[in-house]
Length: 311
Image (tube, rainbow, N blue to C red; front, side, top):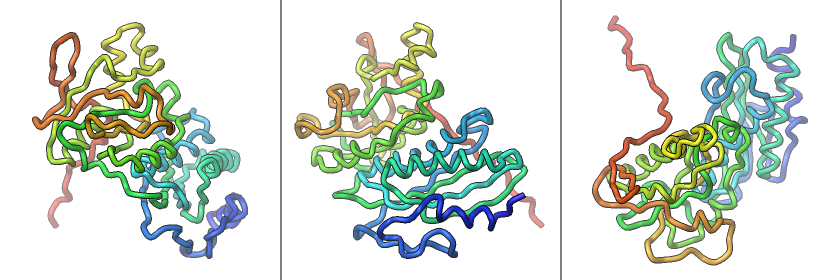
């Protein structure tokens, strides 16, 4: 049985190095050169039983944990440089399983021109947990979620809903789109849609001072997978689109009446608004001439609220 040191000894060769890495895998910490004045950092885990099942191919799990973080960088208009990877491995995750997981991580990192420069490994009797910390740099300005303004139009960069049918494992982080949006002065706030369109929109509006939004039900881009899950029920398909989560497309607000630059990576559908920001807090769905208040649908991690007894 391989121990932690024997396992990590070969990781430096497996992931390789890159220009800018002064000290890579194998020391107490990595030393890298920052390609810009500022760094953009994020950290996101995937947990067996929450983000994937035991039967999920581990190569896909590896790609997912990297790409989740890269989608967060994309939402800031940043490009990736370095990755730190932490793996908490259960007994069933043997040599072959670890190799598959690592191949997925390396594949996603290379696709984004990022380099794994360190991390940690531990064993557990619990579920498999893989955490990636991504470090990138802004190319121009940094996009933020707290900059929405009353009157802004709402946009999403791709279809929504039904991610459980496979998209949550196969999505590509919208790095090019995020970088392009950051260069558009008419774009105000931006955010990665990970927990659900309505929940993430509510988060953005709350961060922007407690604003509200109206969503045009006919303009929401409903994915083919969401329609499949709904089995022909249009209202249920829309519900999937509004609340399923793990879409990993970008949500942004844009100054009304001002167009984005011509060209670029956006589809014509993404350029068309799906709603608008209003002053009154809350979310309203507009359809069939009616305006209906809707809850902030999405996935919420429930955290325990128990306190330790006093000694």
